[in-house]
Length: 414
Image (cartoon, rainbow, N blue to C red; front, side, top):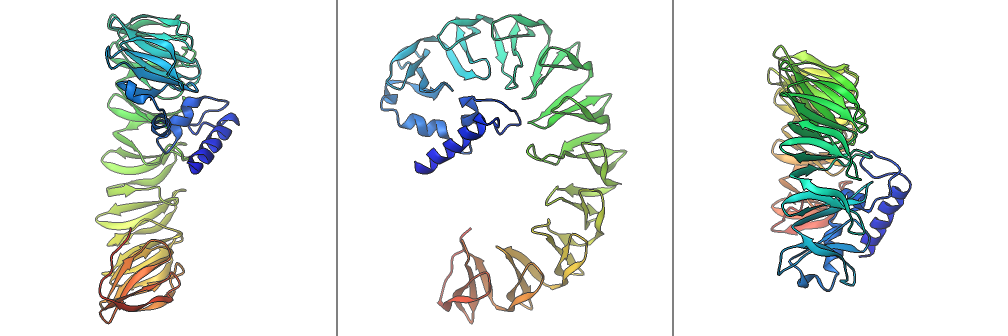
C-alpha cells in the first residue's frame, strides 16, 4: 500500500506539472491517473469499499470519491459516494466515466445515448444511436443519428453536421470521417486537414495515421503533418509511441526499406527477407538469408555476411560466421572473434560454449571464466548456476565461485 501511495503521488505531481504520460500538457484530470498507470489502481481502490456487495457492479467514475454502480434488482446504473450515498439516481441503462476536459459522462436511457454533467443534469440530449469519445484535448464528441455521424460539443451543440457514413478517432486532435467511400481528416476546430481522397486509414496509437490512396500508403503524424507521402505498396510501424523518431518499414516495387518521419531512407531498398528494429538505434536485416546491421542514420554497421545474429544489447551484438559465434560493436568491429559454438546473455556477462564446455566473457569480449562448466543456468540477481564434475554450484557475475560444487540438481529461475 505504501508503494501504491508513493506511485500515485508521483503520477499526480507529474500531471499537475503538465505531464499526463500521453503526450499532452496542462491537464489535471483524475482519469489520466487510472489510464496511464501500469497497475490496476481502480480495482485496488474499489476493493477497499465496504459496500460493493450491495451492487451488481462497481466502477470508478474518474470523479474523486464517486463511483458508478449497477443495481442488482434493476440492472440500472447511477453513482454513489464513498459512504454509499446516491449522488446520481440509478436510472440509466448504461453509464460511462467522466471524460476530460469536459467532465461529462455518456449515458443510455430509453435505448438512446446522451451525456450528463457532475450534477446529473443533461448536457447532451438522449437522442443518439451510438457515440465515440476522442481523448484529445478540446475535440468534440462523435455521435450517430439516423445512420449518419456528426460531432457535438459538451453542451450538446452540433459542431459537425450529420452527413458522414463512418468516423475514426485518432486519440489526439484529429478525426477521420468517411463520405462517399472516401476518408478525409478534420482537426479539433472542424477545419479540414486532409481532403476526402483516401481509400483506407489505419490509426497507430499516439503515433499517427497510415493513409492509403490509389493503393499506395503514406503516413500523417500526431501533429497532423503528412510526413511520408502515399507512394509505398506497404507500410508498417517499427518504432513505439514513446520514441521521438518514427521509423516505418515500407515496400516499393517488391523491395523493402526503412524510412523515418523526415522521409529519410534509413535502410536502403533491397530484396530483404526481413528487417527488425530499432533496437539500441540499430536495425537488423536479413538479405538472402544472411544477417547485417544499419544504424539509425542509415550507416552500414556491417553488410549481410552472418549466418545468424541477435539484436544489439549494451553496445554489442552476437553474430555467427562460418558456424561460430562472436561479438561485434556498433562500428562493425569484432569485440571477440567468431570462435564459440554457442552464446547467450547472462545479466552483464555472456556465456560462451567451446568444445562442449561453458565459460563467460565480459562485454569487452574478454574471457573472464574459462570454458570448464558442463551446464549453466541463470538465477535471479547476481547468481549463475554452473555444473562442474557432475555437481552444481553458483558463481557471481564476476565469475567468482560463491557456492561450492556439491549439489546434484539446479533449477533455473527467470
